[in-house]
Image 1 (cartoon, helix red, strand yellow):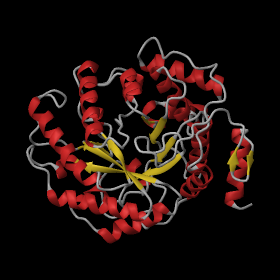
Image 2 (image 1 turned 90 degrees about the vertical axis):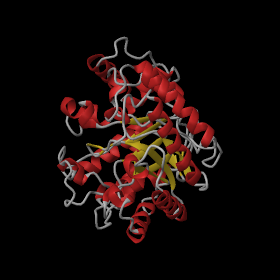
Image 3 (image 1 turned 45 degrees about the vertical axis):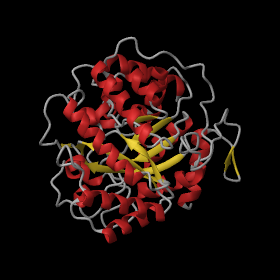
Length: 403
């Protein structure tokens, strides 16, 4: 049986949704906005993308920019039938001084946006990085609270202002992600401080780029326990809720194994949890990070996980999907071993089996109307107690009732 035929049969069986002439029918209410509608970037259409990890120099490429290598990477990424990438601006490279943003790095960002645009790839730009691949990059001029020190706030505003001048020249600019899991690098004394900063920065982004969609790509922690930002503010302030659904760090892997329900249905259940905090059962949700390492499961299980987890989230009404990551990382870079095998593509630009699976799903769904959950009867309030235990009880209860 051909791989495409296998995937389509699995889609049909797994979703129990009629598929005819490549159209999904009788799936309940749909949203109908265009992918190109200003101000929503296709919130109500399925979108598929990858978190770009440059194959040659990782994100050190900002300091050793090889346009040919990046072009080759983007060619293979585009062949996966995805429509966007998420990129990481290492803040210390771009703004080494609080009063100055590097023109050379801005030029390189401009080129990357242009190269992506030539391949019909939209770009989400993650700004305050910060935390990346289990490393923290902190500014030498940090003094006092990242979230409230006036000097730090002025530096952050300047940074967003200068970067926005580059980004808004490109029609394929999706919007800003305030930072990659910045709550792992900078922690507020309490959620009031974090939420105030979050609201202020979202206002700045919306003023600088009103036709784009901006998010705060935190990790799972604020959804599970108190960690810098409150889940209700995260859920309500963003036009689309960005979630990082990692089976290892949430504890799903320990609870059910690589292909257990807790792992397969984690993204779907976290989407339901975020919507509960939003008070809206159909609030748009973006699984901005999810993936699997060979350190966590067998090589042959990763394509199965990719397929089942993505289809589970589609069934639950998730809107956008961005796999971590596009490429594996070269062993010459001394990162945690789990990071080397997270890609859909090898460092030599060969598509892996999980890449073929992701491509097949993207080809089938990308650009179509998002299926709203078929029933709202199981929509409920978030956990009464904001703790890991209470959150997992909520998630497992939802999984048992809905999958």
